[in-house]
Length: 308
Picture 1 (spheres, helix red, strand yellow):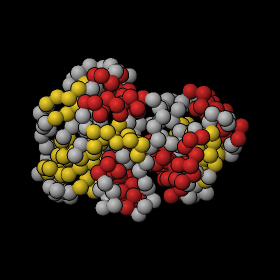
Picture 2 (cartoon, rainbow, N blue to C red):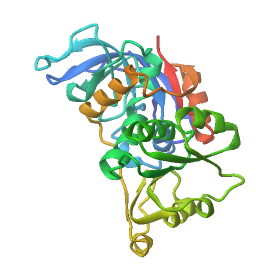
Picture 3 (cartoon, rainbow, N blue to C red):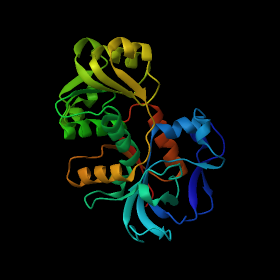
């Protein structure tokens, strides 16, 4: 099958088209024929060599979102059959390819009202946002949450999930993204280029940190005692957390089928809408351009890769 791989760590030019063996289907797996995938920041970080532990061996096929058609079903799998429209965040990489093998317990059906491209934009970023707000921060109706980089892939989903829960939402972004964020439900928009969120906001229950560094440290100032800071990027300073009387942790998303089912339900009801910045082709050039765009840190929502 055709795949876009890397043979060594480095720049976007390392992404190259190759013929590789089609994956075999385990007894508890499904083979998905990829119709769309997406680019996430973790992809270029692995490609650059910042997460060498994530690279088992070369050639390495990156990509962590799959949307497509069931092409083959393992002997123990009863909930899916050939031809089903499905999507998933596999437990490993491998979606920059024509086919990928995915454990059946983390796969969901694509809602009828979503295209493959829209579905491919949801799993990794959507479940990351869900786990941050629901599993770790325990965000509840009536609480206040600050979401950093609200226009990013995780941010756009976090805003919508927080509004679904019934929270009051503040988010940081550049001025050009204000209209987008307000359309997603943001109550308090912070233009990070002109405003200091730590001087404007106070008494917040939850902060979703997607930036780290000084932004993370300043975020402790807006939390009220008993609040939660959840980071996607680096371990928070526990001395600052203790001083502020809050809990603070970093986590990595784990694929969970029941959570993807919940996101699919919200999407089918129109309560969760993927924000897609640009769509590229599943080619050597398409992936290189998408990676370079992702590395710019100026993506609105998700970058989607179209295979069919």
